[in-house]
Length: 140
Image (tube, rainbow, N blue to C red; front, side, top):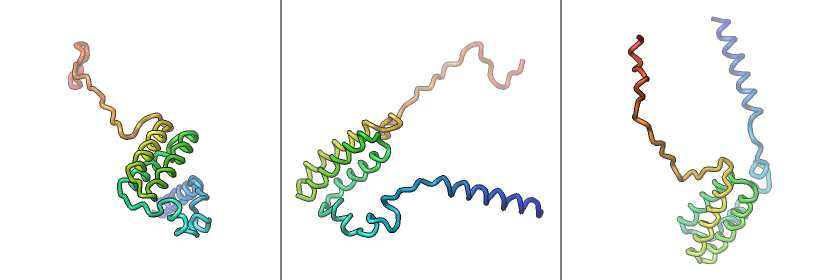
C-alpha cells in the first residue's frame, strides 16, 4: 500500500513539474504589464464606442483566426480589423462589417494548418466489400 502511494505521489509530482515547464508565456497580457494596468484605455483603443453585436462577433472571429494565421496574413488582417473598428466607432457599421469580413478572409487565407475551420469535410464511405475479404467470424 505504501509503495503504491509513494509511486502515485512521485508520478503526480513528475507530471505537474513537466506541465509547469510547457506553458507559453504571453508577455503582452501578463499581470503587471501595461496591457493589464490600463484596461480602460485598452478597451477604448480596441473597441471604443462600437456597440453593434455583429461587428463585435466578427472582431472576435478575426482575433481567433489571427492567432492561428501566418505572420504576414496576421498583420494584414490585424490592420484591416483596426480599420473596421475605427469605422464602427464612427457609426459606419455596414462598412465596418465589410472591412472585418475582409480581415477574416485575410486571416483564414494564412491558416497554419491550411484548412478553413468553417468547412467540414465529408468523407464518402465505400460500402462495397471485396469478394476475397471474409467476414471476421469466419476463421477457415
